[in-house]
Length: 156
Image 1 (cartoon, rainbow, N blue to C red):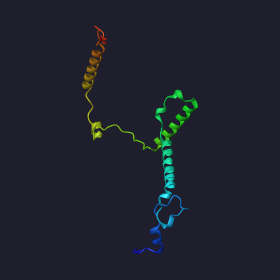
Image 2 (cartoon, one colour; image 1 turned 90 degrees about the vertical axis):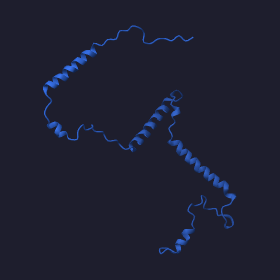
Image 3 (cartoon, rainbow, N blue to C red; image 1 turned 45 degrees about the vertical axis):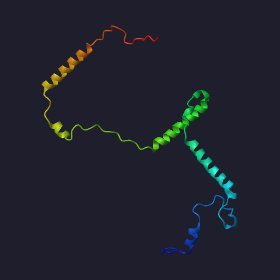
Image 4 (cartoon, helix red, strand yellow; image 1 turned 90 degrees about the horizontal axis):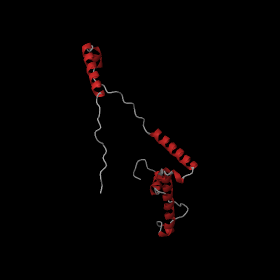
């Protein structure tokens, strides 16, 4: 058919419909296209397809409105819990695992920080003394209750 790789078999393949008819035994009347007489069968096939899509969708939906356990028997409740945990396990296995985050680096050259001189002992003593004063000040804070914190409003 104009292509260097074509053959006589390609001509038959070109005229073959891409979507096969759902009922291959029946033939179109008088060699014409499918007429309106075959529309009911096409509608039933379409209806069957829509029904199968609906059932597949219904199987994949978790009904969260049925969380009220008063209307359920104990075994029904346990079955639903088992079903939900199974679905959750399947979905959690398909998600990519997150890597653990490392602590942020405070410097780009830690070897220089570690090799530097130590902090003088007088500085360490001063920081310790200031921390002790702060602790003492915080421990001496007291609240004197003079009136109620929660007051009832008089609503007429």
